[in-house]
Image 1 (cartoon, rainbow over the protein chains, first blue to last red):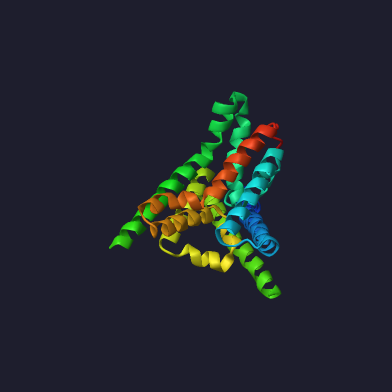
Image 2 (cartoon, helix red, strand yellow):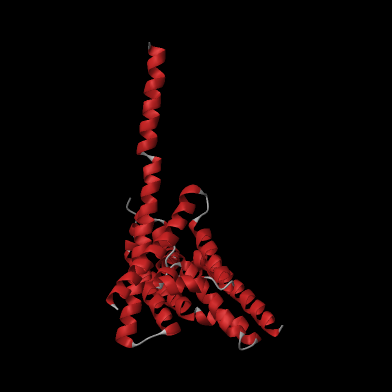
Length: 153
Length: 124
């Protein structure tokens, strides 16, 4: 009796656990990332329209100004400690937008400011942003040269 | 006009959300750290625009495609391609020229706010 009852209980328990904990948590995190990431992009789109209609910006100037504003708020909210709280909830939704890039600059800089304004703050700003800038610049040079050479042919 | 604007918001939300969901999938199911994810997304933006593809996504979704870090890669590649038409100097400097606004903002505001705010103890 007991030997038959135990596996049943175990199975039911395992089924219960797997239904409650990791999967739903993972699905939730995907949903949250979608929601927050999408929302930040909607703010970006809203800024695009505002700058377009109010200041007649367009093209590179428009795109540049939108990213500057978003980076400003990403850095500001990181300073206030709000962005990290959003990040806990949103995961990829707060990392991937340009505001997350600003967050990756400010967060380590703040943490290491006690080591000084040069080796602490200024150097540690680029712990995560550094590789992004390095690979960004190198790959853009590669693309530029490929297009330049292709244009000569 | 109004319906066009509303539709644009929906598309920006959907495309931006999907890009972030892909990042969350990588966080959940692989061991790739978020710093690496940012680099991979940036490089995929560069490669997709080098192939001439990311521009279509930008036309379709607006900020939904430009706000994620892959849009930064798009900007770099787009600048390099534009510069390459003017010569070798433009090909080399075009990328960073296009990204100047974002980089300047990140460095200036980043330093400023890290200077102004004190790190707070992490509450869990």
